[in-house]
Image (cartoon, rainbow, N blue to C red; front, side, top):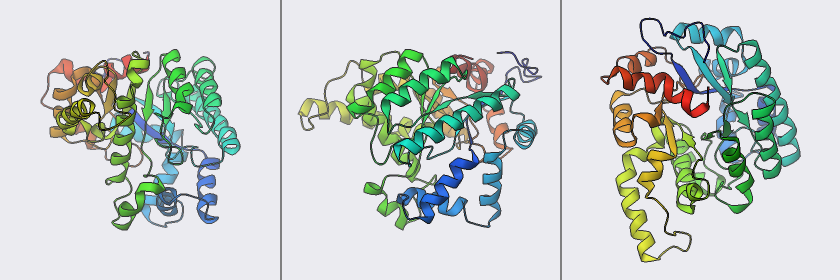
Length: 350
């Protein structure tokens, strides 16, 4: 990686933030139209009914920051000492639209992000957004993102209208990521209508809890269906400290193996490795929204120093002092450089 701050100053490492959101005006206007016309699912209605219409400072500031890919974002990065941001289109991406509109909007958004990366090549890295409503189109867009736009990873905002990537029809997307040698980042959106009811009723449908539950489920569905046996070199990334999976990993692994032995579930077949093994060899997690030393060091202990990467979760959790939480972690200098810089360089091929 070439960067004017490539020494990391006195730190000895760059700060590469790996889950940083942006949006196009067309994208946000599309969410608001779906909400206004009553065509959005409950999660989009809850999330963008707030961010798109609330006069609160949080809502208006987040939308402004999502849309800015130039001076304001660079200034915010400078203010927090973030050297490089890996950017992707915000949740729920283009997965809430009908297929034709989703593909057209997604392609334009990818072009817009590529233009921003070209304007700021030392500060930004892009990830390809997709429209899983059309898996073959998405596979072609992944290839275009790598070959033409210079993107370094693939972003999917978890389920697509209640459907998950473990379903056979989505295999072209997984195959395209594997063939491109690029990580698939599963970012949250609100749980689908089939499971969101109790979350909305209690105000727990968003980042407070529902996001993590939903993405953790998605990743486990992929692991247990054998995605990494089919594509052993595929890397999947999830944020927010691994969406609680590192903490639960011992029990998940034990109960999965018990379920396989029992034959209770038809889709729960023997795998080449344990879930613990896949989490340590095929999954990377980021610290987005989890600037909490006990959680970060626990995840590094469980998954290994090579599997955890720094992220801020800009602009949703823009807390400048959280960068210092990472800088002050009581871990070795070598481990800190992996966390803040070199793991991201390896995973995203920077």
